[in-house]
Amino acid sequence: MLKIIICDDDDFTVRLIHGLLEKAIEISKTEARIVCKATSGADVLNYIHKNAGPYLYFLDFDFGRKELNGIDLAKKIYQYDTNGKIIFVTSHGEKGMAILQSGVQAFGFIEKDPSQQSMVASLVRYLKMTVPAQCRIPEAPALELPIGIDETVCLALSDIIYVDSVKTVAHSICYHTFNGSEITVRDTIEHALSLLGTGFIRCHRSIIVNKEQIVSVKNGLVKLSNGVMVCCAIGKRKELMELCLEK
Image (cartoon, rainbow, N blue to C red):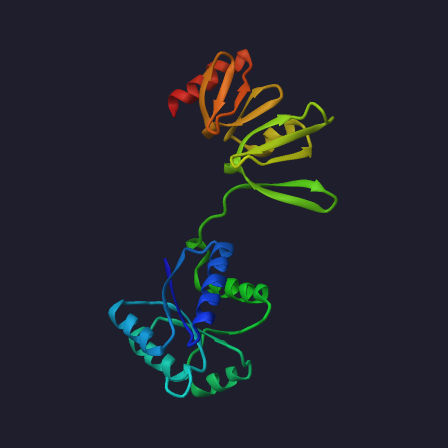
């Protein structure tokens, strides 16, 4: 688990970076947690003195006249956390040269940008650089479904409850999700089953269900975890009942 510390003398900036980092952690699929948010270098030093690292730090460069500047704080951090990595977040891109000339080893620089999207992209890049690929959270298997001209939607397999043919629209099927959304695409049940894989089973000529979402089979109907009842072909009832018993 990657442990992260944020430090900036402006509380609003601390909260902003915290929110952007949360987004970046989700996007990068990184096993990471923000463990300390501080508005002074003293708070950071007090925290790491009591809690062993290593940490990934996001530090402001200029903390005001009464505080250690980013360079001095970085030097003190490395005394406690020799394996820590420090990224300076600054409004002044030219400060990066001053940091390099000071001899402080910086892992990277991020310029405070009105475009939060740009900052998130930078945060994602550094998170991926810090955490080896094998330590990242694996992405859930998903389908990319075409819903229009040059438009697709990505749907996690675990979110799909069942798929059925759309009787009112020729050559179309509908993906029903756990949260109640419905996504209709031009496709066939046969092709959808080949895409969905072994976690799904065809219970009727026009219906595919997620094996994990089957609750019971009774009176020719399959009850799913969201309460929906779908038809079950006679030849499939025994197989689906056995799946229920296995669960």
